[in-house]
Image (cartoon, rainbow, N blue to C red; front, side):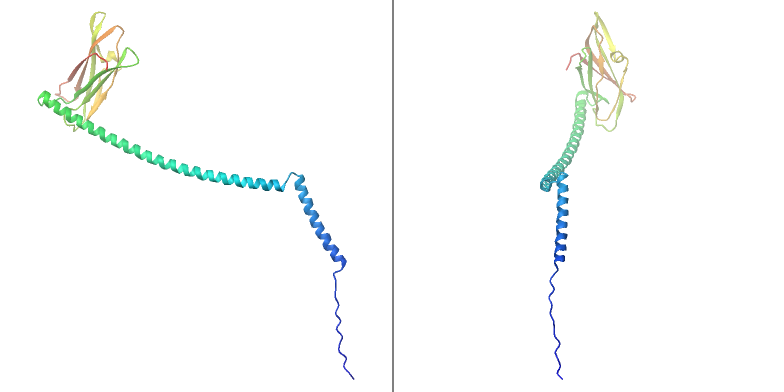
Length: 239
């Protein structure tokens, strides 16, 4: 009895036409859907090329604005730095001016002190009239008295007192003296002062119509007892 070898049968399977047709239909359906989608966007006003171009333009515009923003921030930082520098300079200048004014006041007091010693032989008043001037204003009948008071000795404390003024002249051919209360319309009968180095007093006075001033007299009275008043007379002349 002989053994018979088993037979091997090899078969090849080719895809059926149905599968090919089904795959083709699926692809066509997908493509058709995409075409319909693009057509719908185009019909609604959507243009891919236009949108891409606008996107590119927007990106360029955003870049330009960001660059401009950076430049503006840099300029703002420069302005802020410059403002800080100017503020420091103004503060330094103001401090320097204050120091110089204090030095000038001190030197003026020392000068007045030595002038008082030379002129009065060492007997100096508590307060001295350093300047007395008459200035015009916009009103032809109104004038401003410019009075500067100083301490002629070394200032170690404040001095206090009052200032009065009167104007002598003529009206309708007769002599007439006008006190400060009359010259200021009853607003001032005397002017108080209080200072250590110096003080400027600038009262406005009004002369009546028809009055011809000849001279102005200023009197300074100290609040301390035993201090004689200081008087100064100035011929009427405008600075």
